[in-house]
Amino acid sequence: MKIGGIAPFTTIDFPDALAAVLFCQGCPWRCGYCHNPHLQSCSAKAAYDWPRILNFLKMRQGFLDAVVFSGGEPTQQPDLISAIQDVRKMGFKIGLHTAGMHPDPLQTVLPYVDWVGMDIKAPFDDYEKITRIPKSGLTAKMSASHILASGVRYEFRTTVHPRLLTIDDLKRLAEDLIALGAHHYALQQFRTQGCGNESLTTVYQNVWDDALMEHMKKSFQTFLIRE
Ligand code: SF4
Image 1 (spheres, rainbow, N blue to C red):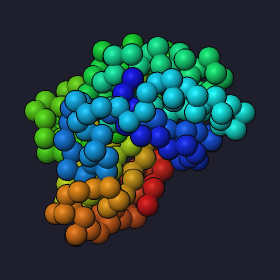
Image 2: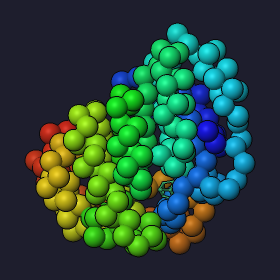
Image 3: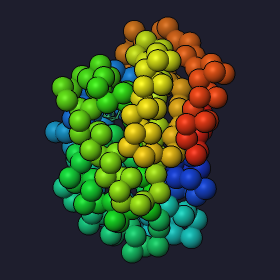
Image 4: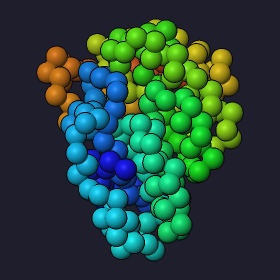
């Protein structure tokens, strides 16, 4: 496992649980608003070796409920399942954050996961304008379908920057998710922290309004907003 960073304690990365987050090194997509660009390089060395991570988690047994594999992109890691099994044996629940660019590895890992949060970047036909990778919407759609078919607890969520997504985009995106059978969705406001793209960090204003909020509340069983 290539771990590029750790958040030792968080209350917001796994629902209703105290968790540590392991940030996996490497992501093949290039979203302009990425707030962990230092984790994108797949060739960068790991900041922590796996035995050190396990020692760290051993000291947190009894204090934390869950460990979340985040990124970067965890499903990029060939030994993700064995790492999850190591952590599960220690008594932690397992969370997974993914952008869904690797549907087959994601499908394989889902039975080992207690909760998954998947970023939905845009309406599936418009993914490339966020990820800068052709056909990325196809793989994301397949991954979202795998999550829904798995029965694992999930949240789909979208980071919103007004230069990248309009209200109409968000409505189309919601339609895409509803067509797949999704019930749980969140919108989260873009944050400047960590983002190295000045064209996005210097001009920013909220895109959503009350009408959109009402639309989303009616469309999903669970709808959250994070500002
Ligand atoms: S998918 Fe996530 S980690 Fe990868 S570039 Fe986009 S925001 Fe960054």
